[in-house]
Image 1: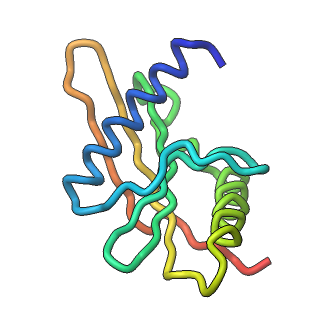
Image 2: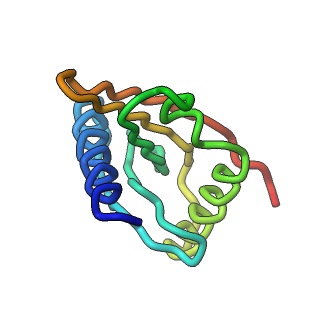
Image 3: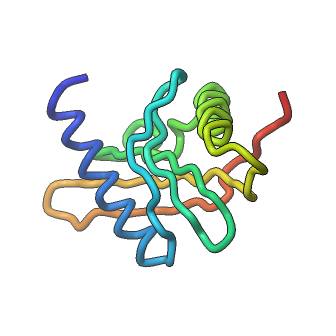
Length: 124
């Protein structure tokens, strides 16, 4: 991944964290590495543990950031979340998957869209 892309991704995650905090989420971890990949943000929203995927784009020309979380990406996120939960031990708290789409464009303020409970995990 190029440094420009990494920088854009980090900027989007910073904006996403700010919006999530504004909504009352507590940020527990960022860029949590698992054997399946990386969870962008792990947060707490009341009693619910939230796994957050952040997609940052410069434009919506190719469907925007939300279109990038397809079925394959959802499966990877579910596997990453399962790995995280196994590391907690004990009973798993209530969980959900949120997606944050961030669009940043030259000369415009960023747009941060939070989709709560964006998809459901299916049993293995």
